[in-house]
Length: 554
Ligand code: ATP
Ligand code: MG
Image (cartoon, protein in one colour):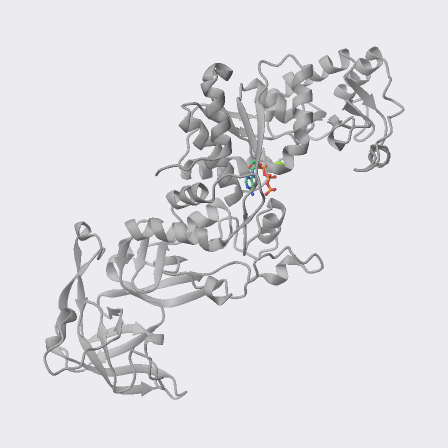
């Protein structure tokens, strides 16, 4: 895939040309393991790993496990496996912010010794009041001028657990009058008497994110620290910390616009809520914008990489249309997905004049790619067609099957509807049809009118029952978070999942590999469910329709 260019690539290329960092490039992807990765993370992953790949350097996977919480454990494996699935490899370069707790602590003592950090006793509320606002400067803490000795002593006692949570914090001494509130003596260490999944009970003081992040980057010799725009205002603090400390290098932070997608939400907090309150069936629910969700939906990793490349990297926040992602999925699947026949909502047809023995029909696996060969499919006396390919009271422009009307069976014959059988409730349960033996495989004999409609089918004896889950967008509005007075949950699309329990699919499909994606002719792309598919009970998920059906609705 030809990679598109962007402003970050230009910056890095320039640095390499000028021999900065010995012309080496090292990037990192630094997720906090407090949820599953989503498509926004995919953008960051593709950028970080992509830049590293292009400039022949490594990209580190660093878990930002700064906070002591046991939740971290359960997400780390999922994150690593998602990054791998997307097609990226960090080799031995897997790290944790907690790997640096000793060094971070020693650097904090350095700051104190330089008179650039102090222990502060203001509580959270007071601290907020002292902080000032965007238009007013802050006020200096009354504890700001403690002596170095006193600060060293207090920080040591904080570290030993002599104080309670919230009683004291360590703050950088920068500038309470700075127009950038991040520089108004930010907290860099706080007391948390909770054990950490990796360091256990060793610590009861923990470093804050901003302080941890820049030091971790420097310790890993990261050259370009790529992050989203909300960190732009934090960059002066990133640089300030590194300027004061004896770190081995000073990475360059560069910000880019995050990915926003319509018809979904991407903040981890909202995704956690969808999962915990059972609005979806888990993190990997095929409707979720998580990597594991789109994977289970059948989106190939190439399509996500193509999408990230196509939307590009910029400095301006935009909302990307979901159909761009779906188009990338179609583009990739159209090339590689084998074609199969399946009927989601079957209506039985008996072809009354068809021979008792079924006929073997050779059907192409991919009409545009003859190399992919053909397979035998049986056409018999009893077949199923899609219920909505028949209409009893059909308008003039309905070219599929209607009473007395004709339609062509794809790869087969023209049939004519002779009789409509109904049950006691008046529902159509079967059609009796006849076929025209001389119309096989597209032929129209002389004297016969050309039939316009072509429909798909499966034969009763050469198909198996399957469950097909027809997924659609999770939300029915473009921005479920736009209206602050309304709960975003009220915009969940009630039709985001329809289950067809009695679908019929070609027999061969019961032998599909887990996660294999097919095009069901005329219906869309479908994948064998990663979790529940078995040859006894085939379960398929609709990945995407053949065409965009949403854009034109607008
Ligand atoms: P969320 O906002 O969903 O809670 P986060 O930013 O807290 O996500 P992190 O685990 O901290 O999630 O993110 C890891 C990396 O992924 C960060 O570098 C972050 O900038 C990047 N990232 C997160 N969301 C997006 C997004 N929507 N688009 C691009 N990059 C993102
Ligand atoms: Mg974050």
